[in-house]
Length: 205
Image 1 (cartoon, helix red, strand yellow):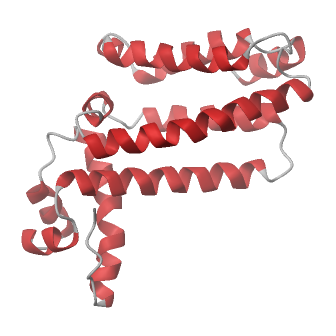
Image 2: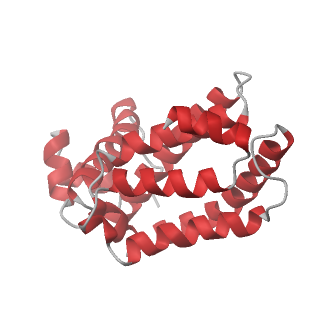
Image 3: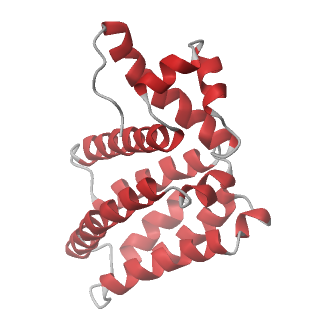
């Protein structure tokens, strides 16, 4: 994990800035292709300074991912708190994801699971995210957008399995991540919407 013995204000600011810069390059070029030397050069700092703040690339990658996830969660919660209904929230979520995928190299996703700390982090988050997703589905049922007859635990698992298939079989080599995601959303999301939900989804798509 990152070292905490950073005393100067400059080092504290640098510790916050480094993950933001690093995660951008990891996503653009793939994790393996980006060296710690590259990150130090981009930031115009010495490699020694970088290693005094982050012990290794895995710790830096994990911190960058954690910051990104926390930022995205805050933004989504802020949007959800503005009296938006389930369909508006979910369409906003997919719009943001769609935009993000347009700027991320598929290698980034395939290489993530080579890092145990990162893999452990995602597994820990997956439990909480699954619970939140199922609660969200139930809210959608109450608002009349999602079918009440479905088992949303199964729906959630089918969604996870579909995305795992995409990455495991490297479908992104044949189609862009955006095209895959658009088709995934169109088929899966529309499948559990009521007529009311489908009308809104079709207009948005």
